[in-house]
Amino acid sequence: MKMPDEIVALDARARRFETPCGEGTMVWRSWGEGPAVVLLHGGYGGWPHWIRNIDYLAKKRRVLVPDMPGHGESAPPPKPYDANSIGTIIADGARTLVPDPEKIQVVGFSFGGLIAGYVARALGDRARSFTGVSPAGLGARRGVNLKELVEWKGLEPDKILEIHRSNLANIMFSDNGVVDDTALYIQATYVPLGRVRVLLIVRTPALKEILPDLKMPLDAIWGEFDRAAWPYLPERQEIIRQACPDADTVLVPGAGHWSAYEATEIFNLLLERLLDKRLED
Image 1 (tube, rainbow, N blue to C red):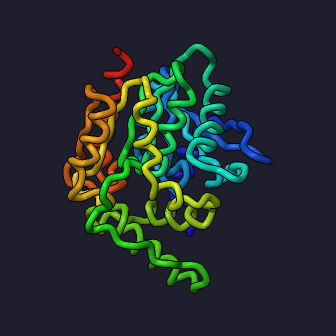
Image 2: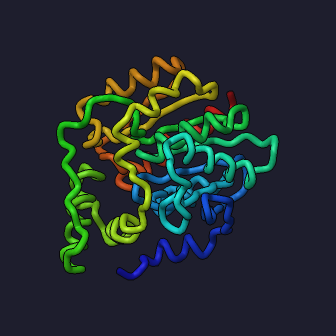
């Protein structure tokens, strides 16, 4: 597929950096100036998971978005890897790019939400806040409407695209009509580049286990109809609030798992409110 113009334009305006990762480097992109916020994409994704959010946040922030280890353009993490080792690589990169003693806000989506918790822990007092967006790894019950991914490897190109479209509709969105050419491009391009066994990590309570260790403010956002979590969103909200009683756990009305893309306007407002609040803490 041809890269959509909106991705081409945003990439052209990015400042590009590389930090160590295994036998190679982790690739970062950055936009804007101001307080630093790191955005971590979902499993088998890449930096364009945030395509509809970067410019909005970059109006008053320095937005740093990597391809996480073993995703997109970034080298794989050293084996054996786990959430902690991946999070440490990202935290080390963030420290390199954001001068001490400036604090960093960490936001992660899905698998990236799980990893973001480990990044925040590794950053310690450099982490100003951690916001999970439909974060994995909470040990909660699996959503009843979540369907298994359909295998695409070895098929004809046209069939592969249709499977990617179907997987997006079945897992990422509440409204199948949201699967536009940009979302399909991101899925079809970045899924084959994934070299980390994401499912082995997200199907564990790896994030829940470290929530008591996190000393920075903690918040979470889910789409109201997130197929990975519905109807067990209250269970997830309670897990967060038990670890951080002052946490905001908010829902994006009508949205599914990838709420940052499906309901961009309200998601951006909600995330900005959470980040602004923690800047004032």
